[in-house]
Image (cartoon, rainbow, N blue to C red; front, side, top):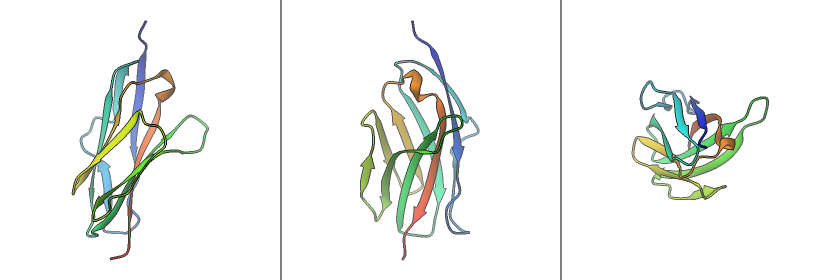
Length: 118
């Protein structure tokens, strides 16, 4: 029996005044069934060439849990805590894909932007 999962995407801001990150569209409540894939997307804007994009999740009354980071633009590093998750980045967006959802994936998801020195 497949169960419905709720994933809520929450967005955090960039670290500098001109840097921003936000949902690609207005749909931030995502419902999928256990075993299905899901893709969450954030768009960002930064004047920096040196960009890291992070994904976290948070369970109720718990601290943020690191999922992964991926470099974009001139940065190319990647660190992924769980290989069911993958990320793609472009000049202005990042996507988090969860291959096979589990009930334990029901959480709040955050994307974050970090820029390095020019």
